[in-house]
Every structure is written in structure tokens, then in C-alpha cells.
Image 1: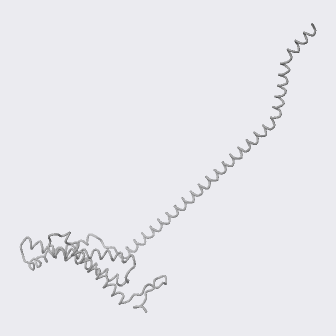
Image 2 (image 1 turned 135 degrees about the horizontal axis):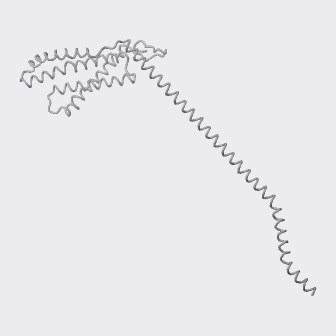
Image 3 (image 1 turned 30 degrees about the horizontal axis):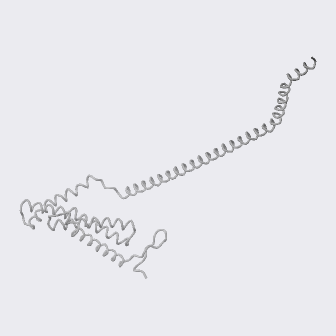
Length: 255
């Protein structure tokens, strides 16, 4: 049995069960983690960062420290798809509201009060009361800052998002196409190179084989002729060697 109704995804796959009890558990878990972060900032980090300060700056530092880390944790929770969607939305709104209250209202008020108390030597209650006037001026200035930054409508935001998405998709498509084209070109180049190399190797092999065959054929053909020529030359040389002796013997016999 589940705690509540299930939420169906667009692809038809059922997501994890969500319900009031699951959302409450997620919210209480996140708040307990925020308390743990506040204690770490108050009793571990603040004594080393704010040495010699009173308890008020340390508490404000711990609150800012815990809220900042909580926002970072919520980003990781959103990426990892942890907790329930309703709990994540509630925690986002809660932490953003607390962070804005801390940065826009509470910290400027305390800074103005501490400055008035130290400069004019006023009591804490009077300093807080007088700090409301500069706080109102600051809030008015903060509100007027939005006039210099035009607000973007939802339709324009969606159009820009779709345009960026299409641009990224086209860029990825072109990148993949170029990569495949280069891969095919390199493959064909390597194939042609190997083919030419094999062709040249076979041609050289056949040329060497034909050369050796012709050499052996000429050697076998010319060997008897050369042997006969050598024999005739040897016989002629012997006849030339013995011819003067025969002449001498003939002349002696005639005498």
C-alpha cells in the first residue's frame, strides 16, 4: 500500500508514490538538515571567521551560512530527483523567501542598528527604532533597481529557451555529421592507402619474380654456349702453343 496517489509521467511510466505524509516527511527532513547546517555555522565556522565579535553577528552569519548551503543542497536534490516534487517546490519557495528576507531586510537593519549604537552610544531598542528610517530608504532604492532591468515575459522566455534548445540541437547534429564525415573520409583514405600499398607490393614482387626467372633462364641458356666457347678457346690455345714446336720438328726432319 502506498501513502497516496501516484503521479504518472508523460511516457506512461508510474513515478514514485507521493502524498501528504511523504511531503511532510521530506519537509521535516530538510528542516532538520537546515538546523544541522545552522549549528555547524554557529559553533564550528563562526568562531574561526568572526573572532572577537558578539553573538548577533555570529547568529546572522550562521543563518546566512545555513541558507546558502541549503540552496546548494536543493540544487543537488533537484538534479538527483530526490524527495517529492511538492516537497522540493515548497522548500525552494521557503528557502528563497528566507534568504531574501535575510539579505534584503534583516542584515541591513542589523547593520544600521549596530552602526547607530556604536557611533551614537544608544541603547539597543532605540538603535533598532532609528534604523528603520534608513531601512525604508534602502528598500525604496532596492525596489527602484528593478526599473533598470526590464522584465522578460513568459512567452519571450519560452521562445529564447526553444531557440537555444534548437541551436544546441543543430550544433550537436552538425558536430556529429562532421565527425561521421571525417571518420568515413579517414576510413576511405586508409583503405585506399592500404590498397595502393598492397598493389605496389604485389607489383614489386611480380617484377622481382620475373627478373629472377629471366636471369635463371638466361643463365641456363648461356651456360652450354659459354662452356663450348671455353672448350674451343682452350683447344685453340693448345694448338697455338704446340704449333712452334711442330715447325721446329719439321725443319729438323727436312735437314
